[in-house]
Image 1 (cartoon, rainbow, N blue to C red):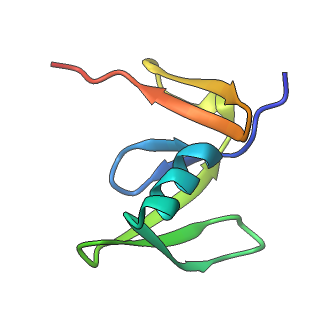
Image 2 (cartoon, helix red, strand yellow; image 1 turned 90 degrees about the vertical axis):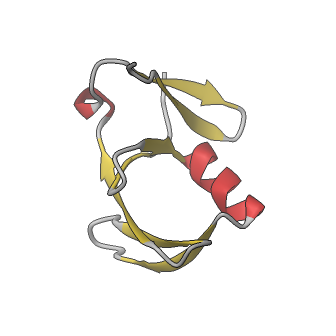
Image 3 (cartoon, rainbow, N blue to C red; image 1 turned 90 degrees about the horizontal axis):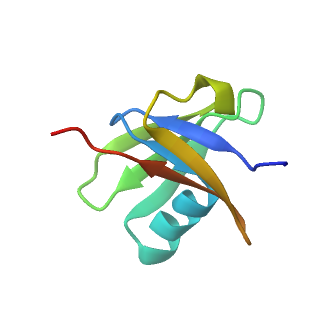
Length: 82
């Protein structure tokens, strides 16, 4: 099964391309800049914080983080620890 892009975020979360588009469409994030060679993207939050999104392989996801294929790409699910 072919999955879309997966990113590790500087705030500690993991996002698929679907998750990122949801953040952009809601206005939570705004594109700041990106590096076409490395695939790294920078997003600005509503609070003005700059987030770094680094593309990673599916095999690099930690335990408790899973991906699912969505009609528009890849969504990432994260289990929170209490």
